[in-house]
Amino acid sequence: MDAHGWAAGVMTALRWVAHVLAVQALLVLGTLAGGVVLGLAPALDAGGRVLARLPAGDPSPHVWAEFWRAWRAGWRRANVVAAPLAAVGALLAVDAWVVTAADGPVRAALGLGLGIVGAWTLVVLAYLPAVLRRYCDPAPAAWRFLALAPALGPGTALAVLLAAVVWAATCWVAPPVAVLGGLAVPLLATGWLVDVRLDRLDARVAAAT
Image 1 (cartoon, rainbow, N blue to C red):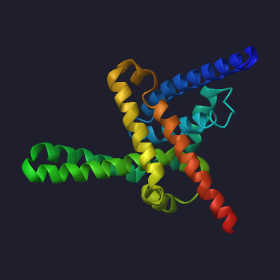
Image 2 (image 1 turned 60 degrees about the vertical axis):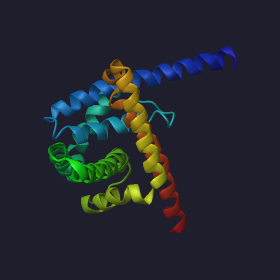
Image 3 (image 1 turned 90 degrees about the horizontal axis):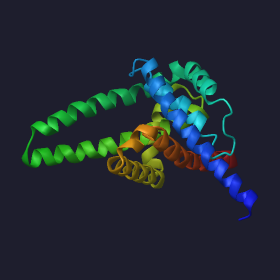
């Protein structure tokens, strides 16, 4: 690689790092701005829109302004589409408490079920920002697609779960990394995986019409 190519690669890497750090901070602020419950989905939507421009080679020149513009514009739709996920998350929290109170085979069975539903929900959550960004379908149609997405794309689902496990292990070994990119890094990585899957689906639909 020549000097010019090396310098361009360094600048690209620094731009990615700067975007990840900025979006991480904005994700926290956006979540808090909505009182956490009503702020998380819009924050993921807005952060996903900013980060999706990195793999596309079109980084945002105004990260702060673009994030808050998307947060405000997509607040209602993001919360409506994410509403079932919030309900499932609450149920998972209750189930986790029940599992800790059980023992023996019952605890093992409940733990297995909780793990499966939790993994499914995690994959659906990874699809959420991309679906909000790419499509304008009514909420019921978005709900159906999100609920079936892990089954329709098992390879992508496994890749998302693997990325989540690797990132969780990294944060466990190096806690400061979780502070710097705890939400932004998996949002970028899983968002790219989901976009690849959705690009293929969109191409199939376009070819069939």
